[in-house]
Length: 328
Image (cartoon, rainbow, N blue to C red; front, side, top):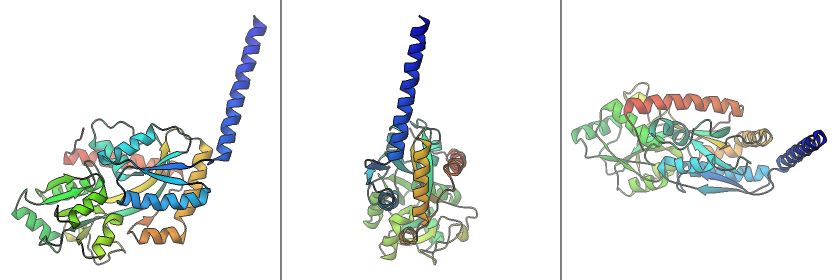
């Protein structure tokens, strides 16, 4: 009997060693098939624009195709949830954002994932200001004009967002709270349809991210009133900040970073972090971000990204609670 147990133990040990060696071989060969990068918003929006640039560059760095998979809806949380529930093998990644991994933590009462614990944070790739714009038919040339117009007709003006609980939703709600405005929220499934709505005159305003709005702003299809960051953006240096126009301390920006499901192999995480950091440091990536009003930024380590995310979750849980945003 003792010999039988010993033999079983040897077999078990051998199986573990075989499994471990197989896993190590798979990690060493990574990637040996296409990678999926989930974007939780519709094609043509800010997250999609940055995601496709990252996917293209990462394909070149890894020598393997990285395909963007748009899973829009529920403020980007559908795509994030799909990522969290995928195998942690490095072949399913997502471009997490302020919306999907910080604001959602405070806004949704039944969020199906933990924005920190259910993901492997790899690296930030960019940060971009939020830009308040109006349809050219709206009689406002600056923030003061817009505030006066809204206060003169409570509940008559409306604004588009990329969806309930997204950063575009929260940015305008923060402004409404600061300026005591009554402006109606109309959610869309992503920045792209929201931006089409304002260009087409379906809505009067949007507080959106720069990659989705910059080209229409430069073409005169929308009129910029203010940027949400603490400092003006080089992409639109003549547009003042919200803080400059009387709302001290106001800040709204979008960060974007690559993540995967929790418990990804350390070797794969380190490989991806190394390649993404190299991409973000290139002049070509900087030029691509500049063209879209974004600033390239890489995390020094996955651990740094994780700690930053914890801080962002805490910040936006407080903000959403203070403003009163609660979504099912």
